[in-house]
Length: 335
Image (cartoon, rainbow, N blue to C red; front, side, top):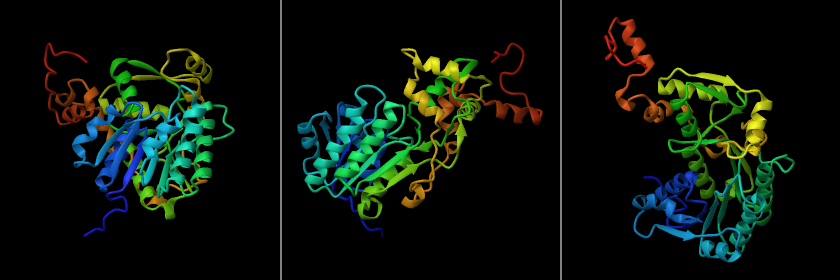
């Protein structure tokens, strides 16, 4: 029989807990018996977590991280703290630089046992992007205020309900020809459940994992072109992808209303891979899982006829056996 987690019955405040990653972090903590407080501008976005918690195990707090009184209220009696707040717009210096430091200061002064700050690969005080500079400033302020904090830097995080794979999945479903920006840019996509597990493991052992930076990348390094092609294959669709020159991509990212900001384009060109200069999943005892384990299943929703459609690969197998694919006779609807 396994020993109970050090987090069992402890109160953990998760700032930004109503977001994509926050849902998975909350689940990892609830499974360990922790009491979880979701602190967010819109905590109602996390109400889907209610059925996963026992009575009294989950709490919601509306929080403005730019206000000290709001931070203190969200941190009241908290034993552990997780910060997941990230943004590409607004006052990035305040949201991702100053506010995390205030969280850490208040947590330290109130006697919190552990603090996990989720940053991002590419955090750099000398970066030309406001995003990466703010992330680096947040890390510095957190470690200054709470020296035993653990800083996690994930690459681009993927999951069945993410905004990354699903954005490309929808585009590939819709258009026969698609541009690819930064086609040779290298990404080490990381599974959201693995990131959530890293948060929980680091939080369970502040003495062993605190005071360090961890770069979290998946087991594969893929280019943007490879990712697009994999998605198309998982949908069973033949698509033509056009590699966009950097000049065109940079201009596109500069235009208002596009799905990619100038900062995102600059970060994409810089790659999002583990540098080798910091600790990794291995130091947390976690073996990250590859995209290929899940992509075919998640792309089912974007296939023609969904689960009732046959992929091109299955049709090819039928043809090799001399079996006519269903609906392939005269008058069949063409793809």
